[in-house]
Image 1: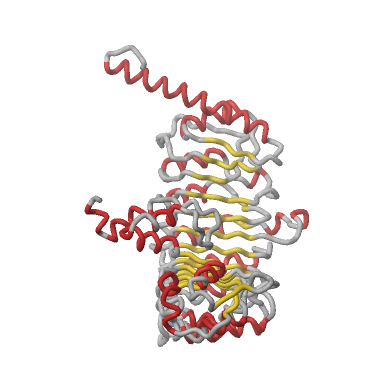
Image 2: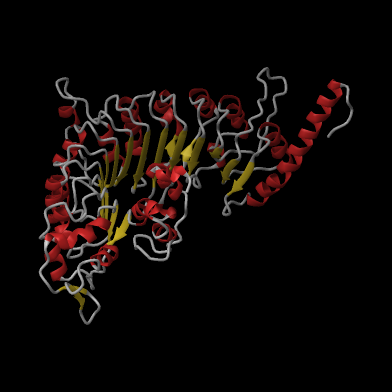
Length: 522
């Protein structure tokens, strides 16, 4: 055997490149590649078993319990495992040989049929705390079985990530207290389907307030003391709040006094689901030079006019302008589109505070009633302000009339100043194309833009539009809205673009060949 197999680290790296053919994740099966490697020889056994058992569900735990001494366990009429004899500490040695390899544990027991009988649970909790599953790092809980209540005693000190679904009776939230007291060093916490009542928020807030090393948090909501705690938490880097209904900080000025510490000092990613943009504005109001890199806001109210100005000002004042690279704001309404009004459309000039965010690479804005552009000036300013722009999307503008779209010529600024732009969603008025051939500004060919969602953009002459676009964006493909009355004409533009681009390339090659003295084109 080659000497490299004597190094466990190299063996493990090689084995990790093998795709296990186990079709049932979280369930250890005796027919996968890792199993075959484990029974090949002693040198392969440990590395292969580590990979075979690194993920397990409650079924995997029940399977490993079958390694208890023969005669100490049996199955009942429903094929559930029962412990029938008292167990000694040495009886668990063979079981521990496998359970110490488990790194990720998933508890997804059926609420109507829990596989853990009382005798099994009683036997496991008699072990010294943390010795049954000593090396579990990530715990996934999609439901609460009998075993769940005892997990704090079964898990070792390595647990760093918790992903739980806590739907159902509010009484289930009481288990959070025992988890927090046992694992205060948790770094990643995802809590799904938590009751959004004040009682639910109180339980979750009390749980979060005990975690001192939290770096990533995903929750439905918190109460005020919970928000205050995470605001001063110096380890928090990622925060997602699904349902922010009320103002999280009733008095932002009290938190921003000169004597107070910097709030959210290490926050890099913020994702807010809010009832209206006012709640998001209140949250952003407590930020000051926060090193945010990505911000996403989802609002369930279509009323943008009363809050948009304050929101963009708070964003400009609270974020480090040299750090933010991604901004996504989506305003969706449960009301029908017919109930929306163009009076609720966002005026593009309100976006001007965002021009100070010089490092923006991704900007996605979705408003049900659209965005109003009075002229091409703001598009030109955005192109100058954001040279690193890669994605620019203005969506949901079906109610804005063609006279309030920027013109097609506005795209020329993007070609000159945004060389990395590869995805665009912007409605333009392409009915009039005014070519200024006397202009001193050179037409720059931008080869990165490959997708443009024209949405409801109107146009008159597909050949004229295609000629302009092919000269500036030779790799562009058009995505029109199927509901637009101009969809057929934009499809004509899409058909013409590759033909015109090929003709321009042939012309370029011909010129190069003529200048080099060779009249042939390869």
